[in-house]
Image (cartoon, rainbow, N blue to C red; front, side):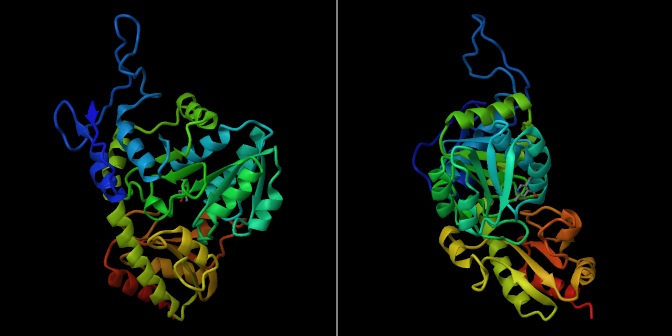
Length: 385
Ligand SMILES: Cc1ncc(COP(=O)(O)O)c(C=O)c1O
């Protein structure tokens, strides 16, 4: 597919809604087509002048979503991956055995497991620290050996906040790079690269796509440097690529990113306030609440709101939490987050006993339904007395 691009600077809402204004040059199509071809014609003189040879390396259906993501994150380049995990692990596999990395104790559990097992077996020296404690991060740095620091903010499932700008200063002073999992914040609310990060990662399965019908990942780089070249090589040679149809669906979802995130966030704020008053809830974990640790940092680095993820701790412990989740009618008992439909999950059942997630915690991914419907449904479910 050939495309023309409107070069006029655009607000991010316009970039997302119009997909950077790309129009198919051949047909005038406003909606991009899907290019399913796995291979591309070589010129008679043995060149590939159109720039594509094989779809593991160059899939034309990636071009528009990657350009949109690079624009929204204000990065130099973006790359789609088969999943968020494929994107995240590429950042570590692009390092070398013997390198030291630092990751948070509170983070997406599956990546924490991978870092604690496979990455160590492969030869990375992995330390986990409390990323809300910048003193702990400073002490963990090994100048000359630490190559990458991983931050997730707000971090699953306690929504721990890390100060990205302050972390970047510490990390860069030690000669390392900072990567930020910004899945929960989305480019609507936080621009990690502008705050000093080197790489932004998204599970595009979540808000970027937004309709719970694609598994995808994305990385955006501040610079197209050697490290980015190694990450791209992990994708091309390791082959963890997205399919064309999924890339197309992701582009469709990206167009409504801003209104979806803002609507869900409005619901989450109302829900957090209602749940704070609920006698069956012992704690509401939401960065938008004034008493939440990290609230002030979140207010500074998250522009326009605090996201649509929250967790509650249920009076009566694990059994009461699981019983409440069993009683919802509108909320859906399911894992994942960032879709238009609201999801509730007893997170400890997923993460296991060695997780920092308390057993009485329910994770709430707030969607774009009526806030009143969500509040009434959750309150009746919590009312197990
Ligand atoms: C914050 C975060 N990072 C990374 C991932 C991994 O993404 P994926 O499931 O697309 O591999 C997830 C998935 O739940 C996540 O919530």
